[in-house]
Amino acid sequence: MNINLPNFNVKNLVKEAGSTISRVVQLTEEKLGTTERTEYDLHFQNLAERADVTKTWTEKIVRDTESVLIPNPQNRVEDFIFEKIEKSKPKRLSNLEHLALDMIEAGGDFGQDLPYGQALIKVGQAEQKLGQCEHDFIATSGICFTQPLRKFLDGEMKTIGKERGILETKRLDLDACKNRVKKARSMLGQQSKDGISPEAVLEQAERDLRVAQAEFDRQAEITKLLLDGISTSQASHLRHLHAFIQTQVRYYKQCGDVMEQLQRELANLGGPTPYIPLDVNEASASKSNISSGAAARGPGNNHSANMAATGHKPNQSMHVSTDQMQRARVLCSYDAKDHTELNLSANEVIFVTECSPINEDYMYGKQGLLKGLVPRAFVEMLDEEHDVTL
Image (tube, rainbow, N blue to C red; front, side, top):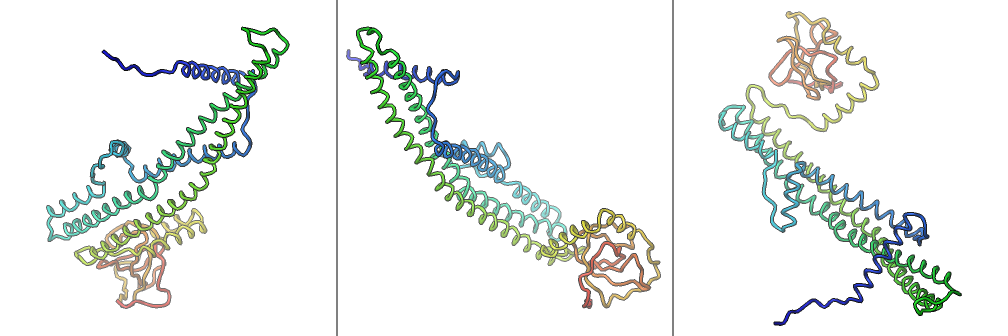
């Protein structure tokens, strides 16, 4: 019966074991400060430090980006496992899509002919579109940004780490050889040991030192070339970052288009309380104006506005003319004190005119089909020169 045994090279095993022990001894003596060590040149140290910084921050950026794209950590772990076993990721509904389905179903139960049911269905359909936009954004961001960065970490950075480990091993061998040469020189002039003269021991030690120095220098050059390549990789990462920003811009633009379409559809539904579309540009400008105005006027501004809102209210026998009204933007939300006033939402645009006689605290407002008193301090006139005929 023939048994094929592995062909072990005992000499190589003994040699490798001896080298490992020598490295351990050398590293221990370095930690204790009882021996000298070969230091890398300043340029190499700078390259190695930059590589460590690049690896650390790239890992954080990838991790944070994935947290933004997929906030649920359980889903991220699940996707990672499916990716490792090379199977397609499960198709799961986003929170927006769950909301959309419930809204559409609720709208059907409430009645598709009723204003609230119609509005729920319209909003649910818009939320479905937003959910699809979100899926596309996540997939595209992974392809153009996170996957290339992770490939860099799993490929180039792992290779650099491996070569740096080999270089450190070569350095330990080099320093061990230097110590042996130093020891052999100190033995010159003494009697031979084990039949080997000190001169022969020194010659062998110097020969081993030359070999170790050559291997160290060669490995240092290889590692330095890899470290230099990080600059090229960062130029590639910059292109991936630009692609990620473009993906974000397209995503938010698509979401904005969906919401603008939804506003038009809701406004066309009509009903007892028609939807008044919000102008995003005007709302942003108004928010900026309110913030800057509040900062300029100081914290006492809100108090003065509240005092004006609760000031003297016109009596019920006042006379107003609604033929000529002006547009006004609401500066901040206001809850009506009674049935004679209008509820106001920040940044919405309404129509106002002066009461007759003019009241210093209130104006007369028109909000869709609703009419009532509006605190003067809560609105900002938009039509200073031209009146709007209703």
